[in-house]
Amino acid sequence: MTRLTPDLIEGVPDDVLDLDSRLMMMTGKTVKGIALEAAGLDVEDMDLSGFRVAVVPITSGLGVISGFSASVDAIVRRLGMDSHVTSGTDVAGFAEGVAEGVDLIMMADDHKFIAYNTRANKQTDNSFGTAMGYAVALKNAAGGLEGKDVLVIGAGFVGSEAVRILKDMGANVSVTDILFEKAVVLQERYGVNAVEDVNDAISKHGLILNAAPAIFPGSLIQEGAIISTPGVPHYFDEEGRAKAKAIIHDPLEIGAAVMAVNSAKYSL
Ligand code: 2YC
Image (tube, rainbow, N blue to C red; front, side, top):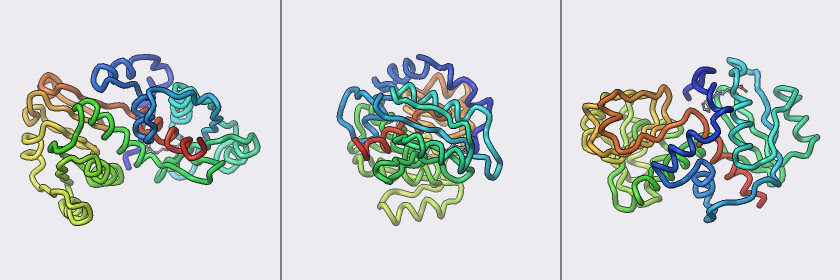
């Protein structure tokens, strides 16, 4: 799992409309709209102000990421939920949230980022949130995926979930990974198409979900391609940006919003 850095997320808390306006242009939906669809809630909007959320900073492993808790808190507030960062960290922070009687507790260590629903005793993690959110964004940007060829780059936590989700959406999924055998595992599990030559695959697909820390040259990108790309680090050269019809990316928002809404759904 790629660890975020403070510079990658520094703009998240203050981003009032930029991401939503970009997403609206590319997908016709805001972050919240994508999160509602990703959580399987067939509504245009929903009042989530009844949900109280505690975001708990976690100091284990490589420690807290400056701005991470504040960013998650801001993202959840933009969904309309009543969120705050606990004053305590780790167990103390978790205990604070429980004592306050919050509905959701959100926290991340170096291995997992979860939204825990205290009412339903259920959780949603960031791998699902990111995979589902970026698949829904791609589907909206592409006007549906039924029967369409989609390439997933990366067979890690997010890429594997994305393969399953895109297959369920009716797409003809191809998957590639720098470790080809990881793509073969998904081919066998989900009946998708493992491809070894990533450059060839990119040049042959107009719909791509890039779930890898992969940076690829614009020369490979099809004119009019739609690229849904949660992968970090994120970079597309001038040619890639000119040729693609849409490049959907954010460092944290869509994944965190989907996991919060999907977890909240358990106690709707
Ligand atoms: O500040 C904190 O509480 C840290 N313990 C947070 C560590 C998050 C590590 N994970 C990541 O940087 C990214 C997240 C977007 C989820 C997956 N990888």
